[in-house]
Amino acid sequence: MARDRAPRWRNWAGNQQCAPAAVHEPATEDEVVRIVERAAADGRRVKAFGAGHSFTGAALTDGDLLDLARLSSVRHVDHGTARVTVDAGIPLHRLNDELAAVGLAMPNLGDIDRQSVAGAISTATHGTGIRFGGIATQVVGLRIVTGDGSVLACSPTEESEVWHAARVSVGALGILTSVTLQCVPAFRLHAVEQAERVDALLERLDEEVDGNDHFELFWVPHTGWALTKRNRRTDEHPDPRPTWRALRDDLLYSNVLFGLMCRLGRMRPAAIPRLMRAVPGSGPVEYTDHSHKVFASPRHVRFYEMEYAIPREHAVEALQRVRDHVRRSGLYVSFPVEVRFVAPDDIPLSTAHGRETCYIAVHVYRGMQFHQYFEAVERIMDDYGGRPHWGKLHFQTAETLAPRYPEWERFQAVRRRLDPAGTFANAYLDRVLDPL
Image (cartoon, rainbow, N blue to C red; front, side):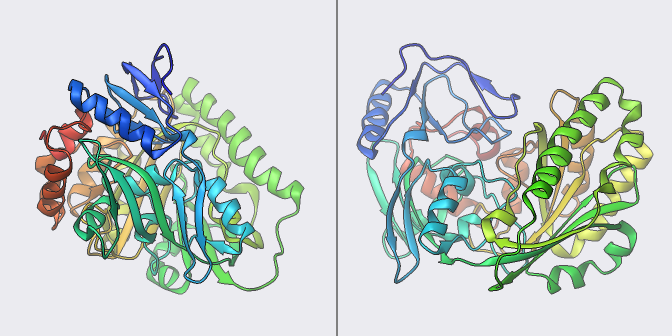
């Protein structure tokens, strides 16, 4: 189904927009095939979006734009293997609820669950946990509509080269219509969240990363504090936060009051250091709950983000350099700097390909200038062979990125095979992958 008049499309953060010729809302794979076939025959380009959570121009087009919201069902659950096949447009938060209802869970998740499955895997979205890979590592099968409208079913044993590349594709290989995920029996997490002195924390960072199933920290700029999250996998009975405390912590403190601080900081940037000193003050919390309820938190404050993946061994040095830059530059930074860790994988365009990885993410409140801050952090990350998150802001090009990915050409060969005419190309892909 296509809308009669295509409005301007904007992403979640509001920093990317386009005027597509038509917006389609396919409900079946056959409908996707027909849209792509017509566009290819007419020489138009095609892009798709799920939740619009990418900060880059990955979904922008002046051709046909596909909204995958109606492709959002759980297709099959194999209880024997814990493999679950889902439509590509299903949002993670809905999938998590449906998995929990049948006693399953995803092994690891990020801290936002609004993205579609297709969007999350295509941009190498991840969580934290040095023994766990990103979401794309959970993919054991997928179906993709290629540049001429053909459908390929891919897995480690069927079209394995396409499967190998398409788990992280940045939308360059085609339109994902369904994904099969390797899930695990449902589990719970024991969570401890508290503020700590950042210098002491960094001295024992390896111990924290190795000693916790899932560990992350948020350095609070203009202070000597970091907010920490330690999650331990457990079969213990749930002992969740009282409802009043969850509402206070996740909505009142983390969204309403933090959003107010950000708005005040946008009006008076010089007040940001004083405002940030209030961030670590909510007190420690400890609880046990179902995994998906602990991994993800509501995010209503909108922002712009850049995130870099660097070798784990450079984590402390890189973060210290970011801290030094903020202090020396006189920049006013109103968002904590997030630091996470994941296991290596073998996916060609995965930001964790071939190495234990530390992710360092920087944010700016929506509507505030970000170029000076992000460009300076990017220069730091370049020194460590940093790989930018494919769905977050960065200033790299194919020329600078290719040397950072050992299987770059392997991916490009699959791209040339599946989309020789560039049906799925756009300006972002031309910049980061080169024009076809």
